[in-house]
Image 1 (cartoon, helix red, strand yellow):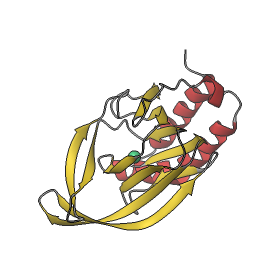
Image 2 (cartoon, helix red, strand yellow):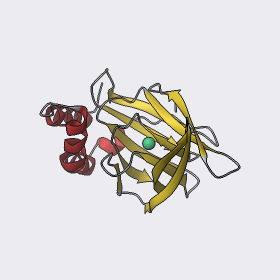
Image 3 (cartoon, rainbow, N blue to C red):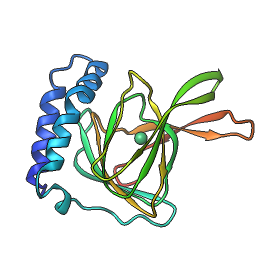
Length: 190
Ligand SMILES: [Fe+2]
């Protein structure tokens, strides 16, 4: 049984994205208007208490699909962080996070393609996010972001305009350049 607040949030985000005529337009609406919808839902009693988090093992993070996630539909996940995440992107799409507990350092990067799957990543900005803060990945600015964990553990709600089923991670080479690697994302796995 889905928490009514989450169900309403999912309906509101779906209606918002239903106005878009392209994935890019959907992402723009998601970032420009969805953030406020997400913030209001988060402020409503019940959403924090009733969300289910999967305990993360030390050095890992867990992703639990709370609502949505069908192909081409929004997805809302509960994440428990006991490790950060290396630079990555969600197939070029936006995402939003709200911090429930703990502290995350989020760095966004500008990319420069050097060769096939080899990139130079230059930090654009770094933000430390505390409980109640929102982190928004806006593809108009950059898609690539890195999550650093600054406390022993953190919990966040994560919302995607469409469920990300694939993504790319960037692995740092000794030279300082990064190798891009594709990965498949499942609802309950990183
Ligand atoms: Fe991400």
